[in-house]
Image 1 (cartoon, helix red, strand yellow):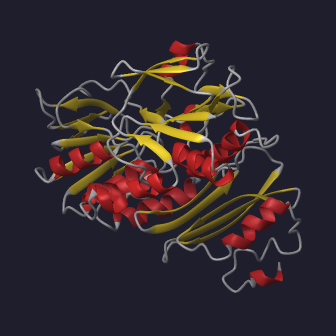
Image 2 (image 1 turned 90 degrees about the horizontal axis):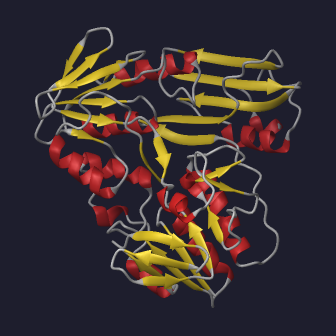
Length: 401
């Protein structure tokens, strides 16, 4: 059996590895238009800051692929999918046949309709090439503007600060990380980031990127102008669905998949940032990994593997600050109860969201003690009525649970 994977991000790589772990005979080929083997996308911040070179962030060498008989075609673009013929047309005008096809092509940066976004000095960050280009350009200027206060925007700002640059972050929403934090947590995070020397402007819309041909700054909706010769737009991502649309594969926001990660063609699957399950594109690494493993097993026809969705979970460092955000963190119904602990002096914020005396959401910023236990309690849907007033206390012994 010949299995072809389009895309070598975390979803494509995970699927290839899972396939090989469970079948030593199946033929596995990966096609990617990048020049680099798989690297964890969060490591691009090390490229941006100059801490690492490309080879240092590769997850595995080319020999790793060779030893596992996974054939990877770098810098090879797929122009067209022909599902009825089970063929791909490549950019060298050759055709590739497959028995099973996995679309793991990921996503591309979204650029809002900002006047002047086409100017020289405006960038987005998604690939190794992007990171290298931005790094080289940043060394030639002293003032940098990041449009977008999400995870990517904040990490990019912190990385660029390491080049001894002046960095401003402009966020459209009234708070940072609107998906992962509530207002109280966002306030704590904002204070901690500003203490590092990064200028944060929230609830501000960018009206125009200024400059004749090259960037000289931006104009905000309140009339304020910020100067800077490099602008990085970090306004989210959109699934790479072009190939699917042209092939007649059903697409909404992403490529529509069923619980087996299968598209409307029996031998075509999709996973990761390009896939849409029950109206949702997850855009997280845990979801990409889970989907890739399930898709791989179903392509091997081992047995019936079912995807039921992924609980939103983020465990990371935001500019060096520990943050875990899981589940429902901004409830809008009276059915939920919230328990909070705020320590502004230490820059720590904790919150647990409960429904029917069970934990359904948690935020831990600056101190993630006990998060492993809380994660288990959520997964097991345990009742915590007896302890809910103590769960966020520093002295609480989580071994009791």
